[in-house]
Structure formats: structure tokens, C-alpha cells
Image (cartoon, rainbow, N blue to C red):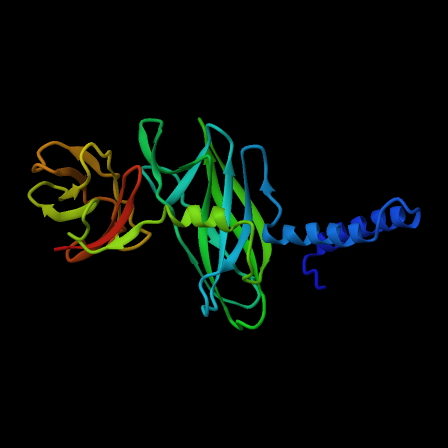
Length: 299
């Protein structure tokens, strides 16, 4: 039996010493020792929580991506105190996105991070984009050598906010082997909240039908028409060609054709010197039951 975590080794050693003493006195059968070690090893499917009363972070391990697929499933689980929030990859009118650093990971070639559907969060007269409660960012980890376990090391810098915002930092480390995991259900639930990637105009229920630029004003305006099931409340989020862009949060407006919901936002927040013609925007539309992501060309 190989136990890769130093903290886990100490924990198992204490369990073994304690139960061995009981066995020596005839207080417990020998089989309890194996059961105790099995319980300790099961904890390798999740790292310890790192944080404080406001927020905490840990890594969780999932089973392999699919049969014959060398990639491994994992997740970053973030726990927030009631009334507190943190930010999406694009924070909206205010805030900073989480910074994820996997440097120092072993036998890891690449880590793909996915972002479940976010929500609008009022923040001192502004609109932030982020998460409340507890949530998971699903990961797909590509190992350098699929025949060997991968060890994921994470450093995350993020902000948590209630009335005021405070910076937070957490570290986590976890071995990934790709076997069945008690965290699989939680990972599947997070994966179900990931946006489906569609083309412009594609989709039978929720769909982004059109994106156009209105010229003439000092700052050009973008108009987006979204189709959605009747009575569905739609939220729309817009991202620029790169993370250095900081587009405003789209606003719902009247005037859409029947069956559509219309949103507008100013084409503002580009980095200095950036071109604003013939660019691609990423649009994420969210309802209570569905999320889609569309990359649209803006002429």
C-alpha cells in the first residue's frame, strides 16, 4: 500500500498505533485495523479545506474522463459563508476573477478549467458576476504519463465580498489516479451546469439569434437578441476577445420581436490600442435550467 500524502501518512500512523494498542489488549479484532486504513485512504479523494470562516477551498478527485481516455476528472470546490460571494472568470462591473496556478504539479501536462453558469450579484450600485454558496469548478487533467498517477498542486488567489471585499488565498494538493470516487456525483452535478457551446442562431430552446453593432454614438452599442422558452428569465453576460477586455454587463431592453428577449451593452472597456472592428465576442446566456455559450463575430 502506497500512501502519498505526508499528512495522510501521519494520520494513518496514529490510527495504526492506537488500534494496535487496543488489539494488544485484546479489545479489538485485527480486521478493524484494515478497515481503519481503508477509511483514511478514502480521504485521498479530497484534499483538506484551506481557508477561514468566510471561505475555503479544496481539490476533489473524480473518476477517469471516459473509458480509454487518459484524462482525469477533478474539481476545485469553493465554500462561501452565507451572504458572501466571489467572482466568475469575468467579474462584471467590479471585482477580480480568481487566479488559478497549477505550477508544481507532478505528471501533469495540462489542466482545463470549466466555469459553471454564474449569476448577477448587486454590489454597491454595480453589477458583479459570480457565485454564492458552495460551487465546483470542474477540471480535466491531462497527465504526461498516463501509466502513472498525477499529483495536482493548486494555488488560488481570489476575492470574497459581503459589504466589503477582502483578498483570499488557498493552497491544495491531491493525487489523481482516475479510479471511482465518492466525489463523482458532485462533479457530475457541476458539469451539468456548464454552458453548451453553440453557434450563433443554433438551438431549439435557448439560443442567441443575432448580434449586431449600432454605430453613430460616441461609443458603439451592441444589440443581442436571445430566444428562450416562454416566461424564462434570461441573464446574458458578454466577454471580449481576451481577458484584458472589461465589457459592461448587458442590460435587458424593450423592443425585441415576438419570442425574443433583447439585450444591449456599450462596446466599452477595451484595453488601450485594441481594435474594435471585426472582433469576436463570447456571449453566455443563462436560464434557470439551461446555459449556452456562443462566440459571435462583430463586424
